[in-house]
Length: 499
Image (cartoon, rainbow, N blue to C red; front, side):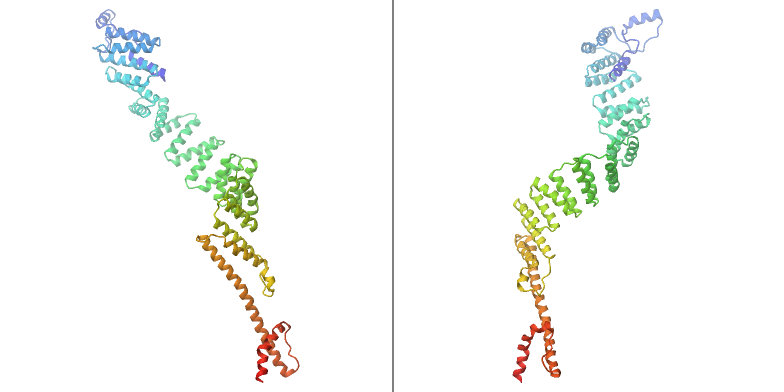
């Protein structure tokens, strides 16, 4: 680009016929015309001898790549008071070229702009120089100014070269004006033959930033067909599906990638695990996570082990969750890990081990009320699995019954829940319930005894009445014999006194 700008600038400056020698004085030209019959130059488009001599010296410096001395000579020429517009425009153009070769882009742009404003250029020369200025502005990081000027050049009906389109796309993208970049990018894409990855990538980038999801989806699918091995394209497609409310389809894409072996990093695996968990498939999520932890793809950290145990507990596979939590507790030893271990043991009805885990959690600062509530609940629920107390048992057997012992232990455990909290109030209600349940057992046994006694009293009474006809001793049911003495005392003794 640098070579092209310098060449175009010098061509405009020197008009081709004056590259190595500037015009002589007006009198000398008139004499030459008389002798050689040459056509007269355009009025004002020639150098006087004073300026011409200095500019020739500057040109010699430029030809030998001595741009600093050339600029000094050109400044010396500009100091001449009666320069015509053509001379001034030419000098500024040469100066811009010299600055450009020294990578002094701002000065070069200023000099080229001065060349135009000096008024000594023909329309086509000004147009060509504006094209150079626009490209130089873009190259110098002034993307908006340069792109706007280049677009104006094109809109005036000038030739559009592929390089100009390429430059406009890059300039508007660099300026982050994606709306202005889009039509040029689409033209660049459509005219490219063959199309390369960069053409697709640019449209994908622009459509994404402009929120044109429909067009982006189309270009991404084209890219997937061309580059099916590119994982980033599949990720982009899945992300678009998810953002478009098609989470299930996004899940299917990611599942396909995982099953196809394309997702093999820890981050990838955790994404799949989260998808399975989100769609309420904790067993499958746990299976994947455990497999990848065993293979080493996912690190076996306490957090990951806790996550695995959570998934197993969601799947109600407490027996597999417990050993994993025990490992996590040994590694991390935090209150939360011990509490989670306690909950897993609680759900597996291992109340003794659950109490041990919860006590360790309490020692490390875990919520005492919540821990003891779960301990007590576990004990109470285990009591319900024991044999019901039979009213026929004697008092000693009733007192030592596993159901009663566990119920008493649960009552005591609920008493460890701090009062004055929601957990404490709930625990108090549980204690009331347990006492009421115990009383209900006593009342039930008393009721059963009373029902049996009433039945036997009727049996004994009928037996006595039957002796009036049969004589002899009353025929009393063997099960009712224990109640005969009480019956006799209560009813027979009274009859004897009355008789």
